[in-house]
Image 1 (cartoon, each protein chain N blue to C red):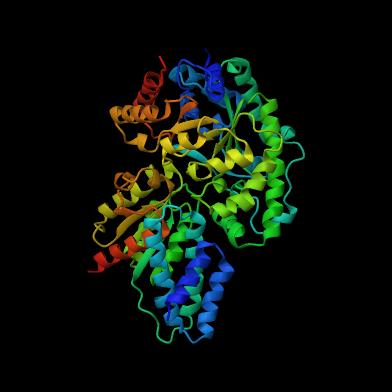
Image 2 (image 1 turned 90 degrees about the horizontal axis):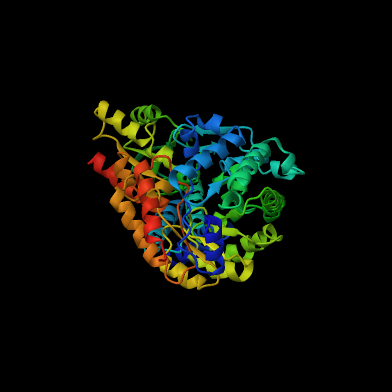
Length: 221
Length: 341
């Protein structure tokens, strides 16, 4: 019964038509679909279809990724408030842009995808110092730190991911907190993530959320 | 032949001794003059001196008048730029903080009278005097559909483009398009002879093709209403093969600067002698490549691009982390493998 909703919802997202996507969810609610079912049977499967589409079809674009994340996040927040039993949160991520970097689009895409996959996200904002990432992760008992960089020097610089890795090592936190990175420089050099000390990276928000989920489960295992 | 003559011959399909070699060194100028970026970019004469010294040192073909992209935001009212010791200056104050600001946002009546234009004008004046007759003088102009990114941030602009009120979106783009027209006129009058017209919102990596056809393209046509001579179509390192034929057909631009991830053979096939294709090296990978890996990549690009001519070798906006030896290795290889003799 959910296939038709997923199809209509994904078509709307691929056409970057926010109103149409929200209308699909509204219709589903009116037809008796529960808030839990909206999340687990429509939103999450549609994100998974988006993942498959990204792999198979290189023509997906940033606008679609952004819209996917924003709508999914918006709907998830609305639906969560209506859950009869609070959902089990998979884990927690501290996210922000690297020190010196003020670009927040990529971060917002990842946040949207993570929220809709029942992962708790604490957004520190932009231009975040390495120490603040680690302190927040410890204070909030997060399993993953995610750092977004739009510019090369904030990806490779001493004050970004490299410094976070160094602090994690100094404080003996490497087994408890994993480090992921994302942003334009990593897309141009897919090996760059390892050179800046990260455990993983992804080229898009949907794949990023999947990889982060895996890392959370590894830490919690 | 001078580098400028080589470029002209390449564009028009005339014989030339080698492929033009563009190496886009911007932030390196501060290091060359042993200055902080803030000091270096404060005066046009410093930027010109840095460009000329780097030209002499490396021997590539082009110099740059544009100091940093945030300069356009400053011309439009941005009050703060975040300078970094090791990278690109960043817009740190958004002129448009909410959609309500769009109606009151105004562009300068004449940018050539604006305080922030003076250093650009000074730089161009010196470069024009020194190498204007022999070398391509590059300028960077952000397209009207992308310029709001510098005014409100990419995420806010993307929201407005795909889900906001259309009239508000287009009111802002119209103002930006007026600004683009002014900039193009000012740059040309000041002697710039290669204008990089940058539009990520003209790449299907950023937005769907339908949006490019229905929305970006008409605005690009308006931006470029006074002519497309020496305009280079560039999507901010976004791929452009999927729109090349559309751009040739609708915009009449004939110089293309694809992304490294564009298939160069396909780029050449699409342009098919109707214009100039650029083979652009992935200069982010150059940060960690060896000299030999750098040379091998230049050789690969040249072997794909050279047959049939109409071909330029170029870089992105070279990150400061690229080792000096790799810059030299890249240029040595470009001149060696780019020779037609």
